[in-house]
Image (cartoon, rainbow, N blue to C red):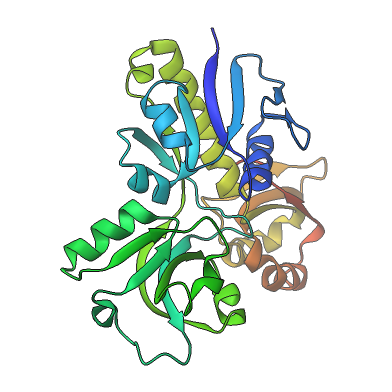
Length: 289
């Protein structure tokens, strides 16, 4: 038996495949390949656009997949969201769908867009959003290069952004944020009724979340003289109590901890001053709570 899984092709592809690699799944693909090889023979992987994955999962074409929360809402797909995976094409943060207009426009609020033309790729969600706000607008689908469509082809756009740099480069200003989105690991409801598939899906989710958690964490190992152990323990903010192991010298112990990578540059000098020796920092692939 195989688990059919859809993974996003395009902007999220590289980071998604890297996340799966850190989770323990080696996936090999070429530029124009849509059926990559995976070292887990129980996985049947297909690369498709993230926009298409929710419907394919809902209809059972895939048992599970990774797609954006935005595309689940856009397609109104009935799927089970197994877990949230906070990463994007350029980092580990959510993306935003925003309403933008030319920076020299007098428009400062979406209420001023009444009866205006809006270009976007997220057409169904945008229509529902403005309808809920009781603001009549004309929403048109954009096939790309949405930023250049104002003011000649549209009065405003709804576009995806991470940092806002592309919008600023095109002399646009944000007047509203309508949706914050992150990738989600989703599954077909009928597939979850199969005990083997359900367990496989849950195991993948566990490993993916562990790999993401490890992105911001590192491990530290050090040797500590017992007389300095109390001082060392006060310095290290471990997830739990540090692991302490005996060494061949009865007066020394080995101490191992997991901590946030951002804390290391401050902590290592303090550990050294407190008497720690042989300090080693190492990366982590997974942290599972």
